[in-house]
Length: 435
Image (cartoon, rainbow, N blue to C red; front, top):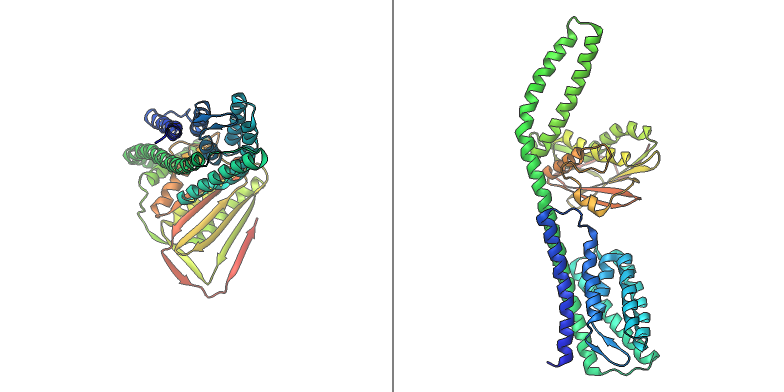
């Protein structure tokens, strides 16, 4: 192995070093529950590796500086989007300018700006791709970038390059970006697992607490309610009756909160029945319409019907509670205008319920924490309603997926397995209800 090849591999170690640094930061965040370490962590990998690769290059000649800067530049732009990509572009141009205002600098300025536009555009779709698609896209971009540099160097600036060295240079780039992409995906997967573990620990603590105290508290509440009700019905002054009525209302509210905790602590249903999803969605909409009207919000309900209606298994009242909680949160997230859309359709053996609002939206960090005990985006809220909603859907063997854009709105997608299917006598229809 010649000296230049060894230098290329050493340059690649700088990229691996920054990847392991990100993994270490994630582990520290999990071990010490450091909430202040947020999304900026992803910038460590591309920025540090980019700087190290350029400051300690493989080789310097009259017109060119050889290093592996393309790998962190492309991956950083795909992962971090426009802001991180633009920061990297500035770093590349500044460092390369101080290394020499020569032909290589102008090749760098042209090719990195040109490829950067493609990277910034594709970053919007990169995070939704699976691992094979991500590796394929990274490889395609790195090959396109290298051969663009080669074309600009030879045909615009008339440079001459060593074919053997160029072949090794391209090969190490291809191998390097493949390994880096896979390692980054492993690190991200590990971090997501750690987040789920933290969330599971919190939920388990609250579950045990709820199960242990709820029954003990509910019994004396029931007895107190009985005696207060007797007091309100007996011979008493009007003031005493009013006080008794207020006390009964507060006791009922406390009982509802305790029931919510019990629902969370015991997601399995005491009563499992067939739930007609169409009917329950329409019922929840009817319940929420007065609140929507008070806030000047339009409710649009779209139910797609195809000769059949589909049934899911669960507790009907708790499922209604889940739908109402999510719709109510959507309405409360909007000001005195906007609309909330509820759409139902079926795909194979899965029921899809989408509840879309036009509220303030949430960041990815807030989405990740939804369903955690006491986490809420409201000024006055406990997070209990959303926690219970997630628990109810989980008890029905379903899932809730949340997508949101800050300032534009949030969509809750509820996925439920179809338990059974019944024929309808009516033909295909498409209902749209607007309030």
